[in-house]
Image (cartoon, rainbow, N blue to C red; front, side):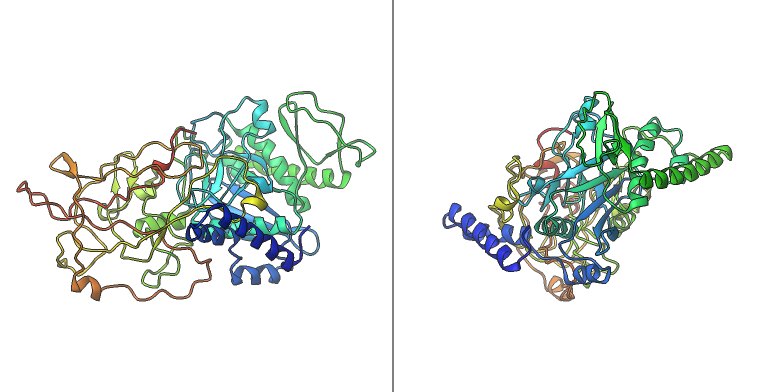
Length: 524
């Protein structure tokens, strides 16, 4: 247990010195990554922790909900019970409701997972991340495949739960501080939705109903005790808070596929859980008897995005950090310009100027260039090895990208006086598939533009900054309560050459290179 701030500071300094030594003279590339992993919690969150009678280094527990697109962080208060600290909207998850079963199915996992310090990755290609530990014992007992399923930043996913960089910075810091306080591991409970009788009744026709009722048992144990349930697996099912009959201190041996050992549950906990289950069963039966509407069963779905991010995508608030004063109703974190929103009706109905919707509802990123907001922090390569927490906490190499200038395509001011929007043009979606691996970017490929159905190489943008662009530059950003995360830098608007074929100057959309998808090389 490391409680002394002085001891932690010395350990941090030692790790930083070691990293600098290994990197030779390239110290500039070490410091940004070190700062990322060691960034303290924002003062507002620290004040919330104190106001809720918690200690900054008290244990945490994480709960994930797909349908609501929410991540909850619970923290142990000074009475010894867990209380909800903060709910984070999930920026992107992929797949559909139901468990992950095989490599490449695009599914984000559901179940109970344990996160140790070695699963925390300060060198993630997606700002920061931690590995869920899929497949766990339950998943393996059913022969399920897949690996390196993460909770990470970057707001893009193929099998992961993806947050914004600002959000994962806080969540990572909460886990890191809990480990510093002595917690050996924290639990992640991943659910399809809040495990209420009403939600189960709405999804009563799903083939996953029996699985979800089993997950609900674990949720009920947590709800009635406000304590992290002990989770074991036997006979290819989860069991919760099992203990040896007559002697709770005696250890039990569980085999995920084998017969369950003789066990019992503490009588007080068992009674509370049974009472809750009886009430929920009555509610479920009544809703089913009334034939309340059921949710459609979706297959090959494209996942989801919290409604606050959906609204931000419709408003073209891409690449805009939450502290940018020139945008109202900014989302709780920066949505990268490379985001691939889910195929959902809310975005399919967006005006063409805010995104190009296909008949299936898939929406490509809106054709908009956000004004210059500062340098972009590039992501470093991941080692794809177990992440040694105390040895890797301060990372290795990272690079800072130079800020790009925002210009009009022909070097002249646009008639409407805006530097943010480009004119017309459909986006040619050529992104490669993603994989499970939390790895670094591939080499960026040349961007192409479309004109009269033909694809041609995009020319370099003109390096001219117009007087109108300077006059319309946004006001300085207000002070933000979020951790200081360098905003992502959008690409500059291209200049279309005069070819006499009727193409509109500046008509090619902005397609940033080195995006999230190009960093993946396989499939989940």
